[in-house]
Length: 265
Image 1 (cartoon, rainbow, N blue to C red):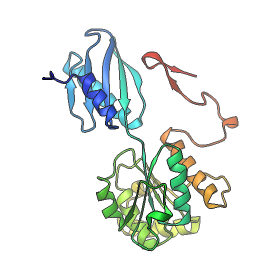
Image 2: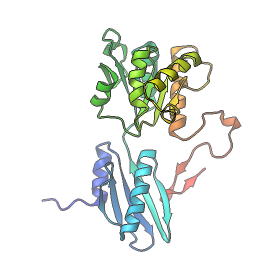
Image 3: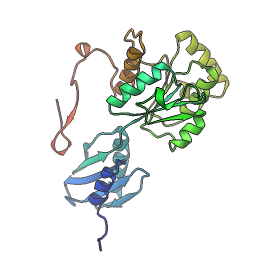
Image 4: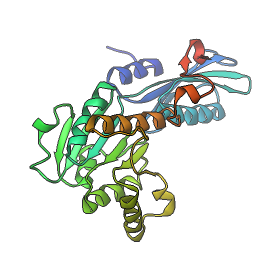
């Protein structure tokens, strides 16, 4: 008969299940070695020795599990390490067009889990999107429901070029906690989209989240290049980078988390 689950044991189970969670460990200070598990719903298991420290640690764990990085934190004379696990990020693509097929392929090889949605069954066929995890035939609200809702790690790309389909997805996405919301279309199309969304009740603050025209300025012409432009913007935003040329950047090219959470060049 197995004993009670420890914070570390449950954290390992979450990792094996490809879930999301955080394990906070006291590396230095009172209660050295104490651990607290923080689940994705905010509930916890274990304690670091005081209610105040537990609250600080839970807030840091929630931030980092969604930022998808492990990190060391200092709180007074206490040194904490927040270790996080998380599933592969999801990309939901609205519009079963050729660009979507190439975007699915690039997302998949980049370690993302792509989905395609379109209410037009003739276009939303599994054979057209072999790299998609799933192809949904239906309106955006049904697709989001089927995916269990929108979380802070989800990215959403709207590619349909059809106002009634675009707006149906964007009205939900822009009011959600999604990490990224982008929409295809020219600057002229974006101006018209903006007017429609504002008239439909979307606020200026919500609209400011929209990346449109979608993607980085690579001069993309083909579906493959357009997919690269879109994925580049999504990855840059996820990593907190502007997406410019490395030769024009200063500082570290990337961060590597070392022992006890130290960041090395």
